[in-house]
Image (cartoon, rainbow, N blue to C red; front, side, top):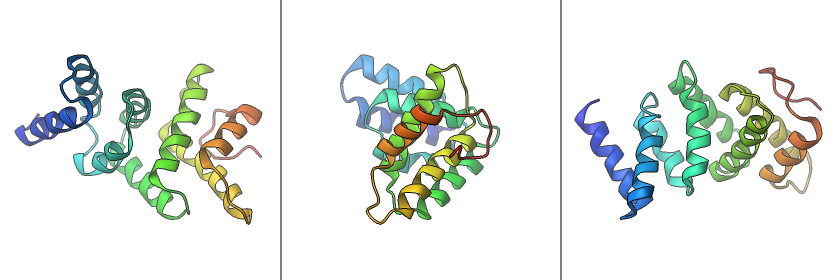
Length: 154
């Protein structure tokens, strides 16, 4: 690991954990597990993720990808084509990934993006919009995830 990455990690650990040694250890583990994701692509997500558990779940899913940089580009591009914020997307991704893990399913991050994208499209087709996290939770509880990388079930 290069020195710049190590300094970058330590700075984020201090921002997220402060002086709490146990939290520093948790964030260090999360960031070490995300070393295959470029720092420039991690920065926007880390700015929005408050909880270590959320970061572990989402970044862990991204880190398992063969090409995390490509997947991150897809995520940012998809978010930019919706009316929902990064925070909305991260909250919805957390709901979806957590639900799948509870069912012993491991969706690829592509599948996760596709599923949330479908929920976003549905909400955007309605005049009053809605809450992406709530719609994702409703859809995944009602329909589940069929184990494919092809988006919607309904």
